[in-house]
Image (cartoon, rainbow, N blue to C red; front, side, top):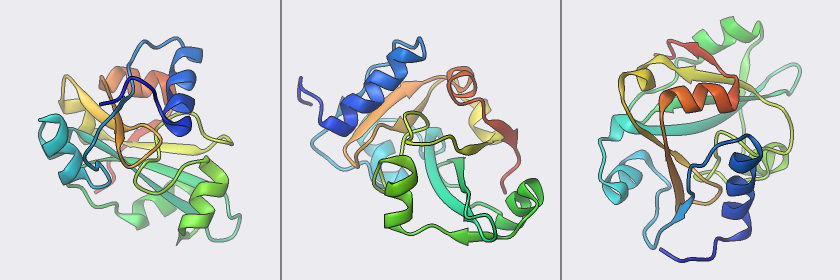
Length: 159
């Protein structure tokens, strides 16, 4: 772990501070791109990883962020019901354009624009969870309550 954050890591740290949170972004030597890698790196269960998955509305092209518990697959039909339109996959360019971050490092905060955010109810089972912090090597620890407060996301069953 380095004392100086990358520009993306610092952007997340600044966003957390601006929202009134004291969570510390950590940049690590090993990758945290996948939930399994992140869990192994920080020493938690894969279920405690709050993975960010970006979709887009097929008609509106509006970005949708789903924050899911590590092993859970998103039931896209459920999200489509919530947004009242079909979903489309978001490619790497779309994710960067709308969030300002690369796939594998999309945090729950600090995006370039406001996103509709849906939070997996399974994350509420844990005292602490871990989220990406701007790069595939950066994470921060938080509570489910913090996640709800900092994102204003809607808690849903995503499975």
